[in-house]
Length: 276
Image (cartoon, rainbow, N blue to C red; front, side):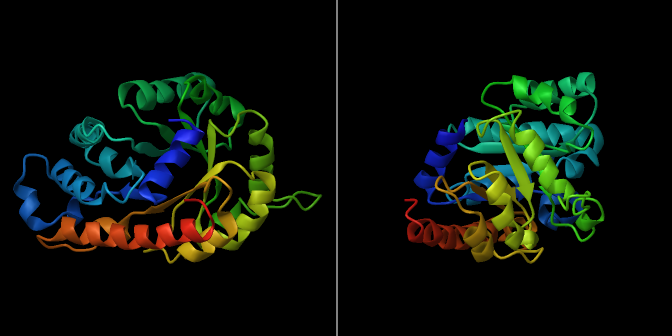
């Protein structure tokens, strides 16, 4: 899926919602625990309920890796199911990989060939050769950590050099020259919404993946105010706020209602900004 196709999907669904499939087996409703594959059963129900309102899904691999081989099997079944729906959807592997070139080449093969993801999150702090193998796949995206939403992000990302340039700004400036807007996206936490104003001065056209709306306290309105561009340029992720909207038998219905609520707000934002 290229840049224009992603924007077209956003306009089609009147949404820039990404649903994070951070599926914790200990939080799955009790009645699903009897299923042969509780994680997949949960994900399938969440996808069915939220698909009309979401343009992207983002499984966080930690929640699958923690379950060993069974977790990887649940993840692969989830991807296969989403692809079987024959609807355009942007699939992100939230893997936060970052290693030397030959290792990165194996990671790229894993996520883009074996698992059919559209994008993967990457840590750029070992240098550009850790990212380059991912860019060799046409139509696939690398999503680089820039300014994250965790409380200690400032420990390193806000470090300033002698000229006053912050480390995350250096990441943006250095990487934008190596790949175009069809290949690179950046992670910017919703809790850092005002920083989007300065980020847009460096990467005005690139898409930004914005986690932290909902359970982490980020404001969708603020993210849109500072981060929208002429092609929307945002994928706003909500994980816990949607998938754990209820812990009872109505969990999927509750997730659908929450996703629709966010999509309705997004639709108004897109309309106000003449993006529909």
